[in-house]
Length: 158
Image (cartoon, rainbow, N blue to C red; front, side, top):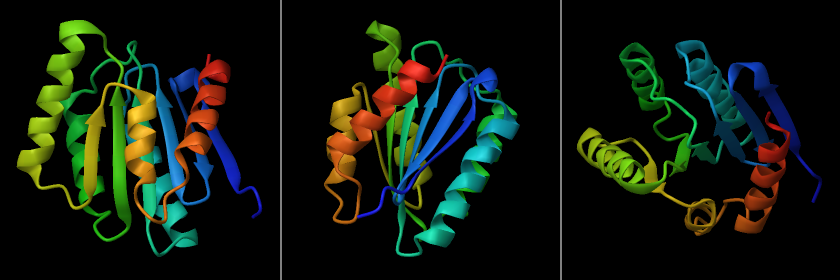
């Protein structure tokens, strides 16, 4: 199988995206602004054009990432609702340590549950657990491939 990786990086803006087959891998280390979040959704739509049977998102929110402003979160919610039938599943890793991390993941899980997201999504505290969960979907990229790429992206991110 041909290697179908493509890196989209705006390191100075605090994020990096990489496409591996039908999966968008994203890592954030600064507060996402509306334009950055719109870029994420735009990249997902472009990925779906190349993989119409469904795409996946592996999203890492590092411990240094600030919470987006309310307008950015609202824009992201609106854009993600348009991904119904396109995005198969999304794994979100929230790497905040300690009680703050536990609370962040609990709040996000509650919001996700109440929002009735149009795709399967699960929130994790560790990268390997998220990659394993995503890889359980029959057409997803294997977990070891995702973890290798996210490790390389992390090293070159800053």
